[in-house]
Image (cartoon, rainbow, N blue to C red; front, side):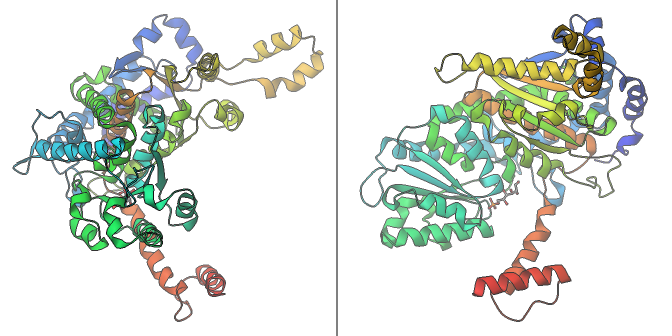
Length: 549
Ligand code: G6Q
């Protein structure tokens, strides 16, 4: 699909001109002029409310942003993705995480084959396996039920299930403790192995390719650890695999009957909905996992069907484009006011930055504008006592996405109202700021001397006018979590479509992998390394000495 460079599109030019005025707008004034601003600039879908009224936009801005989405070919690209066209052109793959959440009675024919029955056949296997583990009828080699599940995987084979298991911890089976090991750093695996009992531990080796260095090394070490206590005959009760590579799974020694497959059209960072979600199914049960899929499917239906003007992923994505490309905001902060979403910023880091951290268009030309901002954040209220200072009074404008649930999943009196009060107050403070007159009045009321007031004034003024979105759900549950993740997946898609980049490959991770392999061989001994730069040679020398000593 060829299209003109982004900066040549009429809506982009119109937005550039529009921005020349918009950059001076004050949101305080926009709220004063438009009493219906909340009603006008908020919408609900799939159990989520998005309030985007605290942004530096007016109706014309929103109309131009939607026009830009249209001129970027978003609608055709969206249709191509949902239809299973090979939109990941550099890897010649379809991108069909949305097919993983289609109901059983749907149909989606790709390359002459309906993928929905295959998807549900694997779901059925995940269901029966999880029921056996949860009920205790699946026992370890000593005859005892499983108490601990260790997922060994990295990147897309780790971040999704780990984030989701934490998010839904209040729905989890009381007997099962979930662990996630990803890092090749042995401290990661060691910390888990030192806590669990081999006779009651189930390892899930999760790797799409089943060749990833970190995962294979951790899997081999876990196997060796198991074999120190039990014999080979016990392995099938304790090791299962999630992969697309049956041969490599068998070669590792895992029975293909204990392998849960998925397909090359599921990208790693979009794979929590596939068998990669097995830890989540074990933790919360198949019914809850089905609700998780249904929540995502509801967001898919909204993204496909709602007019662009009332389309949550489109609005979220285009507001991001507005700040990235017109205000030069280099980062975006994610602030979940929900402790159970503590891993959500890390999850989004991979989702957005691996997808849209690209510098060439799908046609291979340099992108004319800045692409993915840095995504970062942590739970509220913790962030307030750390880096929110920079968000309030630093020199950059960093848009913030607040995420909160109206109802808690705990019974501790009072906490939730304090949490929500802080969440809403921060968004209000970012928008309102505090003017010099307000600071003066406040300090005079406290009888502070005039010279002291003037000295402190610049430090105590908050510029305000800092944008944020508020995402609210009734409660964090499998369905709303599914919808939330799918919302950000589609937001990422929208931005990739506007920037005309391939959001589904990740060539940038390759170079370091290859170099690490070379250095690994050098660290293992052999001739002294002299083929690197002076710095790398010297570092390798030091490590060689330490490792051999
Ligand atoms: C995600 C990436 C990457 C991948 C890991 C693990 O989109 O491709 O994070 O998920 O490198 O790969 P395997 O599942 O093949 O081990």
